[in-house]
Amino acid sequence: MNNPVKILIVEDEMIIAANISLQLSTLGYDVIGIVPRGEEALTCVKEDRPDVVLMDINLKGELDGIDTVKRIKEVSDVAVIYLTANADETHFSRAKSTHPYAFISKPFKKLDLQRAVELTIDRVQQEQHENSTTHSTSNDSEPPFMLSDCIFVRHHEKMVKVDIKNILYIEAERNYCRIYSKDKEYLLVITLKDMDEKLPSKHFLRVHRSFIVNLSQIDEVATSHIVIAKKAIPVSKSLKEELLKRLQTI
Image (cartoon, rainbow, N blue to C red):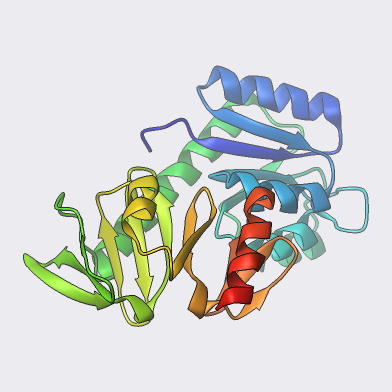
């Protein structure tokens, strides 16, 4: 990860949260927020897309940390590290079912926190690498060539035609874009901004800083996200009105 890793802290004891934030900032991480409630964590994950979430299990409010992570997993595959002062078997089994990347027992030392985050980031990078080699991808620097009803992308040393009607959505991965079609994925060396400028606006709309969607592929529209092929995609508040207008004209 070339940019600083973005970390969200979900902890209702503000003194502990502030101490964690200071330690992470000292280690060079970008702490994008500290929130005390699960509901606020859901909003931050949808809008700010952290790389890692540090989640206290024993949150106050309607959602504890484990319930919050279950809800987060419906909209994001973000890596989760649990913080807990209660490591009994019941809590551990519930937490384990959400597939966290690590557990940190309170009280913990700075080195415990550092190692847990480093191991989590290493695992995320390894999974991203495996995904990029498993799925059909294109990482050539040649930009896509676009026509009114299709685009051509470089894939395995060839230019492959991808019908616009088969594109589900496009997700930003820093200076890359990953096109999700009905049957394949393609990784392109192009920013989402540049991709947005090239795509025909009749079919596509940027609904979030990290997502462009094919309007005809939208299955559901919720308050803060849309669903395409069972994938929940966040919608920025500033773009929601434009999305609804566009859907009315299809």
